[in-house]
Image (cartoon, rainbow, N blue to C red; front, side):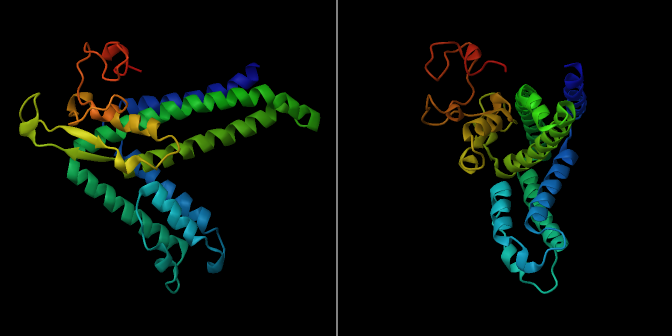
Length: 272
């Protein structure tokens, strides 16, 4: 059992070191850009395998994947028809287009706002995927002993599969960070409407762009909402008890708008 635990502890050290670095860094944009570029490169690599002929390229699949991840409908089929084009040129065009979109988004909302959203989402998604990964490893260890019946060493099998799962988790993190940041939109309000002091703009998340980006949209919407400080959100004209996005800033000692009867700080406003 100790040897099995060593595998988990090695992975835990990698994650904790990464999280510690993120916590101590105000600007994680370089990490986010690297994740975005690697995600696009993986998508291109899956659609255009190495040494594959042009007729073997899955261009329609690549277009759908780019649209799913980035929300951008790009003329990839037209690119693929160009004489002499290769996977390198397609990858570079995709990276350039997505980088331009994200640069425009940062210019619209301001670098400080985007840096805060990036860091918050990156930390939350890392924590979430790590918890899921630990559960998967636990299930793997419970059934790994059966490999002995196939004349395979359970420990070696566990190490190999745990490593593959860890790599899958990191790849999933890169994709989800890219996906959420590509889709999320912020709406800027007139500073004069801010009841908490002049000179500060309020922001609210727009959920329409997030509706289909993940299988569990509620989870991602909550991540997107919490990426912006709560005191910067304005209540909608019609408050929906089932939609925290319409509540705006709720005083911590006030009744929770969901109707539970509990104080907000002990309900939806509880620190998690």
